[in-house]
Amino acid sequence: MQQSGKFITVEGIEGAGKSTAVKYIQEYFLKKGKEIIVTREPGGTPVAEEIRHLLLNPHTKEIIDPKAELLLMFASRAQHIAGVISPALSAGKWVICDRFVDATYAYQSAGRGLDAKWIALLEKFVVNNLSPTLTILLDIEPALGLARSRRRGPQDRFEKETVEFFEKVRHAYLELAQQHKKRFAIINAAESLSAVQTQLQDALHEL
Amino acid sequence: MQQSGKFITVEGIEGAGKSTAVKYIQEYFLKKGKEIIVTREPGGTPVAEEIRHLLLNPHTKEIIDPKAELLLMFASRAQHIAGVISPALSAGKWVICDRFVDATYAYQSAGRGLDAKWIALLEKFVVNNLSPTLTILLDIEPALGLARSRRRGPQDRFEKETVEFFEKVRHAYLELAQQHKKRFAIINAAESLSAVQTQLQDALHEL
Image 1: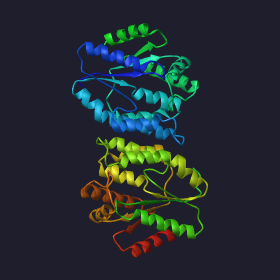
Image 2: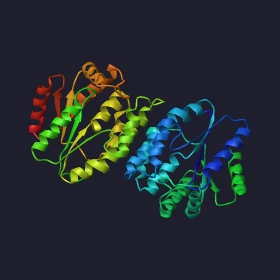
Image 3: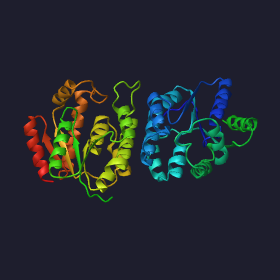
Image 4: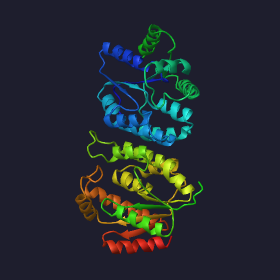
């Protein structure tokens, strides 16, 4: 696919400060005169947001099968890419996305225990050669992140998971960052807001 | 998986008479003292029924991407197998399912034009070695089937498709029946109700 805009993803566990970082990145590039789309996964289109609701709803009357969870993530992603991300990038816009494929490796493979080979196949089917230019990984101790996110209000289906689950997710994110050093910037999200913003600025400056 | 019950699927395009056939099959085996579960796809569990609504809703505000449609079908199926089909078969129950994987080959590959190799991969991931013992294919001319289904009331997102779409779907079903002769029984669904029931009886008798 012809990509004239740039695609930036923001990753991290619950309470790492993704929303704040996304806003900071948006303003940083707005000041530089870029046309920006801010979006998120799962979700990003009306149908994909309905899939998000199915995935995050903590009151689901049955246990969601891990394979069903994985397929819902990629269904939402297919809809999101076709309806939002690809058209925006083709039109030269910059897309900032709160979570993307890395989250699926971290949560559904490391977290849920599904074989990563299936995620790689689904990635090939759905995402093809659309890769972020830059992935910001907000790294934080799960105990600290969860304490932050629990202060925010009611928990979704993922936020109800154990610290052990998020330890696995965090470890997988750090491994992905090791495997794709050029694409990833790791931010120490345990630091103060201004220190996080300085780190973000450094990462964005390189773009 | 240990399969002690039998798994019977009913396939066919809109208006072929699947619901009537399912009821007939259910009564046929109830009379023989079998414990029967009747279910359907997409759907069959609370979450899978929510996915069904996303798939069939004719008022969706955006075009559903064919890949998203395929992944939603398999997400619903994963949930359905884990929550209903596998436990029932393991408990020795007989499961009659209105549509299963054959429908995905017919609709999403032949109908929507997706490469069947992706469906085969998803089948391996989700369905694994769970194969119907018997698949009843209710075969009918699309023009006749659609006329029947349109008399029934409001059309869902698939029923709004063209006759050409259903010609492709029907052709794919007949090809699948050719490829899996032992598993399939083709019923001429254009005949009278009693003639269809006689054909069904012959197919069920062989089981």
